[in-house]
Image (cartoon, rainbow over all chains, first blue to last red; front, side, top):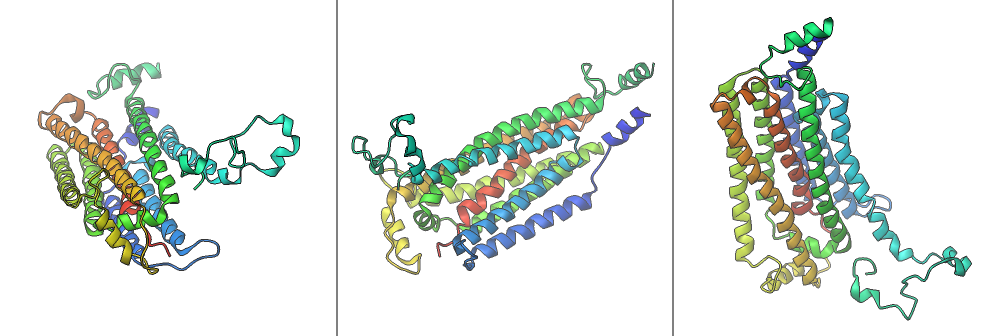
Length: 144
Length: 239
């Protein structure tokens, strides 16, 4: 009985129409992303128009990637283990982009509250410290 | 008793390797192995995308001006070709499930042709950049980038930092180049797969999963391009 189920599962064949619809959706999304890139979108709240453009372009890319992974790569029809493995790559990318937090937060360093107990902290490299080298010349990214 | 008859039945499946209980277990093992490799590829490209994001974040305007020399039409054409090749690849896998050998070879051949088309377009793109000296180094064509900086933005006369512009081209050649290397490797794998199907090799005709594994690799290459295309060719104008 279990054998028969396994057998039918093994021969689960996705109909051609599903693949054609996916391909057409990918084409339509590609045309949309090219057309939207040519328009300067207006500012939305604190997001500048440039950022709005970029967010839309990346959102479309993510939808395209989702379609390819779920339908073409068959993750939608795969076992739970396959679904887990496919998510690992996505989680990795999220983790690595967490490093951006470090680059964007450095300019707030040193935070005033850190100095309330001066003795508790180790000497830090700060632009305010005259004994330390000038970081603007050595590392443009961190302290531009 | 039941397990015993199961294994007896499955021992007749010519695609089943002796170390696996049944086809379901074998397929899952194959697929998890391939996904593990793909996750390592995601780590590889993920780090590159992070580097890109970091510099783009800081040098938005310089990157925008440098990117205006890329041809969106060529990029869009290549995107279309790769998306279509993913479709033909998936059709080859479907044909493998249905054991239609000629269809498998046909769809794989179309996939290879798409890959070659992609490389030809890439070749023309790279040649025009090399001809214009738009690659990082001492010969970098600062005049071309400067000229563009003067009319690219509304506020006119934008001073372009040439180091940042070269950084853009470094990332462009680095990331699209590594992607192109993956396409070239993919062509080699696809041709080997066609050969296996042509020779009616036991490894592919009794079990469609090896064909599917090649498909997973090919879709991954497509996936990387889905992100490279908007990031390099469709940069929004700073406004």
